[in-house]
Image (cartoon, rainbow, N blue to C red; front, side, top):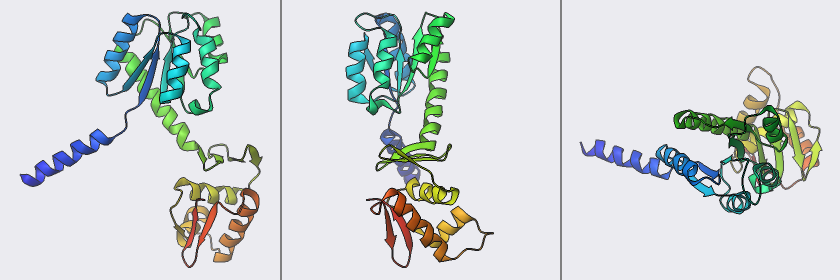
Length: 240
């Protein structure tokens, strides 16, 4: 019984420590904000609110939300202009922006996407449907982040096989890219030669340690000597 209680407390503590997704709600109608905030908090989201675009820009820069729900028609700064400004903020490069608006004309949706929005939802929408859409959007952004990330100044797009160092795109052969992708997947972790060979070349391909060393040397020539560390007698790790 005591063991079960300890397990329950440990699980409960773990759940409390799990980070909540942060959502910024931007709308000049308080009633709409209240309904959205109530339903999102009930689902465990951490919510922030803004009544216009100017306030939204300030809050977004401070809290860096995972997702922003943005109205189009607002005072001081409309949704389209706000979206453009949000997209120009480097801190918000991983923030998903979707319009939630009564403007459902085709040209409004096109303008929204041209402004940089990731999605467009027309009002009215049932709260349960909206929550489901939000969860789907966050799953999509999580997947995109797994494919694209900036690791200590090196940008890696694993889906498109793109690597950029200080904004300059590098043309890496496939094996060099896969080696770099492996090492940067967990910076600081030491990858043994056996794991590197198995992950990059596969168990069915017979290559020697010299092959790894050559590829490491070529990577260092292209990205700089400071990124990949040699752990003598073991393997390699990524990290300055």
